[in-house]
Structures are given as C-alpha cells and as structure tokens.
Image: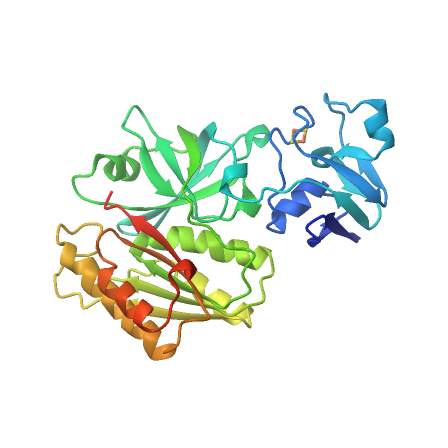
Length: 345
Ligand code: FES
C-alpha cells in the first residue's frame, strides 16, 4: 500500500510505501529534505503534520516539547505514513543549505568495467549518510595519500551508496593505488560536498547534457536525480569519448533511452588521431579542445537555436573556448550554461 505526501510550502509531492519512513521516501523521490543522523537523535528532520496520520517506526532519543507535539511536529526519519499526508517542512533550497561533512566510508565494490576504468562504490554508515546535490564532488582520502577531488557518480536518492568513476592513468599515484592495492572494506574518508554544478530545479526548459570521458560521472548523478524527480522536459545527452569504446556505461544510457520518452542520447567519438587511450592519459591539451569543438558542432547541427535550453557540461580545463563560442553564437544565454571543469587527475 502506498500514500501520497504533499510538502508545504513548496507544493512538491511524492509517494511513500508502507514500509519506509517519510524521509526515505522523500530522498528516493529526489527531494532534498534537511536531515542529519537518520535515526531520531539530532532533531534535524523535523516537520509539522498538517493533515493525515503517521506512525513511529522505532524508538528514538530526540523528543519535541509537548506544545510542539500538540502542533503536529514529528521526526520524518522515524515516522511512516498511515494515510495521505500534508507536511510543513524546510527543504534544502540550494548548495548553501548543505553542510560540510566528514564521513569514514567503506569500500563496498570495485567494478572493473573496462581495462583502465573502474567504478568505485563506497558505503557510508547508516547513521551518517551523505547529504549532497547531484553534480557535486567530494574529497577522497585513502591510505595516507594526498586527498583527491572526485565527482559523485550516483544519485542523492541513494545517499548511503556512493559511486566514483576512476580512470587508471600511468604514473598517477591515486589511480594506480585504487587499481592495484585498494581492498574491499578498506576505509576511505570523504569530505564535502563541494561545487555549485547542480540541477536548476526551478527551470522547465529542455536540457542538454554534455559529458567528456569520465566527466560522465556528475552528469549521470544529475540525470538519475532528474529521473527520480520525474522531470518532464526533454533531456538530450551527448557523451564524447576520445577513443571508440570509452563510453563505459553505454548500456545504461541505452536503457534510459528505452525507458524514458523524454530522453535522447548521442555517443560521440573524437578523432583518435593522437593514439592515446583517453584524454586523462594524455599530456596534449589540444586533444580535449578538438573533441569538445566536435561536440559543439553536433549540438548546433541538432539545435540551431539554443536560446530556450539549459546546458550542463563537464569538460577538460581549457578545452571549452571554441565550443562555448559556438553555443553562444547559436543563442545560448550565459545564465543557462552550467559548466563543471575536469582536472586531469
Ligand atoms: S535526521 Fe536526525 S532526528 Fe531525523
């Protein structure tokens, strides 16, 4: 059995199943409610029931004063719906509402998806799930090495299981360690989230996503978040890889294509003339520049007028000049461009 929940003042709605808390259902639906401990200790997930009934799912340490209880205040992390609900609650409005967090995680899975590409899965403690916005990045500290910034490649709707896309780069201590020494259950301390590359949820404009190589990770996070939120506007993904075969989650993109009426996908490959296997492994800045110009050309061939689009791009540092010039010439307003710059390591 499921119930409908309406949040005020935003008016956002979602469905909750009988065996999940209101907080779990909201997060699964892509709604960024405030919370911290997720076990009834901190009081950070408080909301006020305006109509409907809830039941407590577990005992907890934090308690509201009697007057607040009489007004309908409850903890959304330890209450499940018993009817349709209307709840007055504070939602995270943007990056400024997400606190900086330091969390010891464990390696849950190392998915060697290609010879030189790994999807690293980290698991947070149940009582310390990560609050972040889709598209943001974290600092990862492993085994005494200098911390490395990596974009999160998974959806905030699954905040206990975090994903990172790692390309093995010869000579790079961090990626070499992950490919040769990292073990299941090893501790990786994450700090963050950082960055303002995230979905503009107030916009109803059609969206173009552009990913380059493993820059697909934050784009994937945003697309999964958009799917969880059931966004209705058209979304088109252009994924550029320098060499054929580097679209390491091509099947996932094709499954979105099959399942979603509002999603389309173009896989692009660079000229490959340099002979290097990926942009990350190459010292030549011209590679990213040429590849991104080719993406720009593909976009304007499909959409000559970009004035009504939002565009989200992850691209190598110093590679976007030619492409952006082209997009602006085709009417893209600067305020509708969201750019996340990839660093080589
Ligand atoms: S998140 Fe801490 S009490 Fe609910």
